[in-house]
Image 1: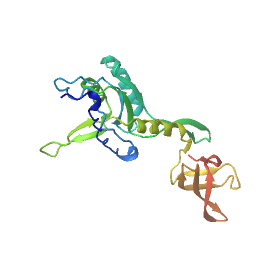
Image 2 (image 1 turned 90 degrees about the vertical axis):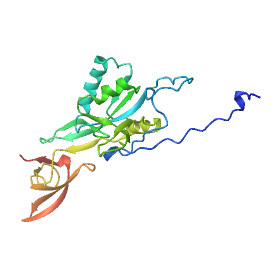
Image 3 (image 1 turned 30 degrees about the horizontal axis):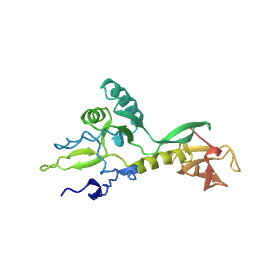
Image 4 (image 1 turned 30 degrees about the vertical axis):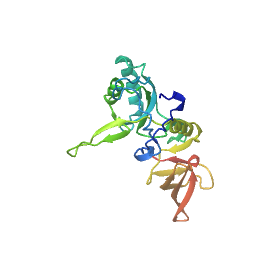
Length: 237
């Protein structure tokens, strides 16, 4: 006797595979349960899954995020895959840089330096377009170990979960602007405002998150550590 379809129990999907990124991007999670179309072929008799665009994390060379984004956008058009490589993003948050002359410059701080997010339909053509882009290191994914030898195996890209993508962009949108200053330990400064105005000193500590620094000032003939606001000093050449 043939059972009606409604009587056939549904099979629960396997739990998604969790993958951590190295460095500052260790919070990214890859969803192994949702594999993009294009990896492997459907078995005989099965209906092929529709192609779905998903977000992937791509590791790039240091400080080359913008260059990779611009180059990949251009290559997607040239290689005829712009209909499958849909978005390329560098999650950023606003910041302010205090220049040597005391003026402030608006900047963008990367949320995950060294990574670019790409929303794309994963297939052989789009993978090759991304991997062959100058300054791209590789996709973030699961390494398929080689059976022999010590060489690293092939990296199989994994899509990011919807929840993780939402969290990344939400973090970029909500993070408060950070004030950065072009100063390091050992730099000479001049105090331009406050009770120590016109004192000169040497930087011993910089706290960008607090927009403050500590400097040794000569007060009554003694080197005294003093905490100052970035806006109270200027860098001496």
